Image 1 (tube, rainbow, N blue to C red):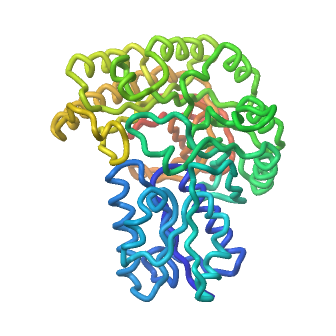
Image 2 (image 1 turned 135 degrees about the horizontal axis):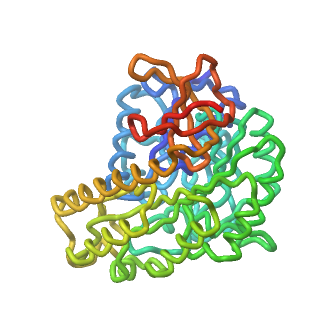
Length: 434
């Protein structure tokens, strides 16, 4: 029995695909081992979103070959999809598998072992096929991420993903249903619908869209919570939000990708909305849901970003008052329009702007958690924790606030009702059972 070690870099979509490949390997009789134990085959599901991601992908591939020079090292995913020639010239890589070919992993490995040419790389920009991968379990024991969409048609000026993942391709709603039913049968109560550009789900299908997908999941027995991955701000319309409000299992946690709170920067980024449109969507969600958690992403130091533009972004983030803001320093990526733009900022400038927004994020997070004090919350318990010498049960509320509660009983996997008592350490809510 050959031993296989897998490693995933980058986003939740990559993590999902890696878990799906692991289950394919297990079904085919391979033994899965930790990365550092020593394997016969190493599979690295690579990332290419930035130049740094490329470098980390190469480092993991080289590390695998050093761990066992006789092992078969497989580079899969986005890095090899966009840097085929570099991958072929890399002595640490024995086999490359691009996107939309991971489902064929077992047959590719067997062809390679039989001495056949087994490299698997397609022209990702000209395929309409959704790569059907699925999981019956995930690394998280109570929450399951389910990939429902791949590809992107947006072509933001800083982003290489459309070239690595191709155009929008949606997974058939019945295939998603079957997977979620299996996950429910295995005890998962919460699912997170995710994709490269989730808001585009269904644009390539007849009679299906994101709302119809959410409504289907809402009807699956055993599933008690639905979360959505990152959403495009333009999808937040009155019709969409009203439909979400009627979906009882949907969690009031909405991640709306922003990237900049300044219209001139958004235009250079080729983001297809204005801050006014974005703010209107936030107001609509807050009008419809009771204190929903709004989270976002922001890039600081985009080419040409002036102090005035940065200040505009900072003030916008203050005004919206997000629960959490994920802050990224702009990282140049070869092959994108932004890489060739004038006015590239220094690392010191980007670091300072990141520091300012991180401080603001801490303040916003505390303010949001303070509003939860005294409120009834529902917690999906995920683990038992030892904190300050005491034992607690830890999990997340429907708003995705971290929550801990003292309990002599082990509650992992249960959904419990509690009251938020006060803010606890590490940005969590201390709660007590009702």
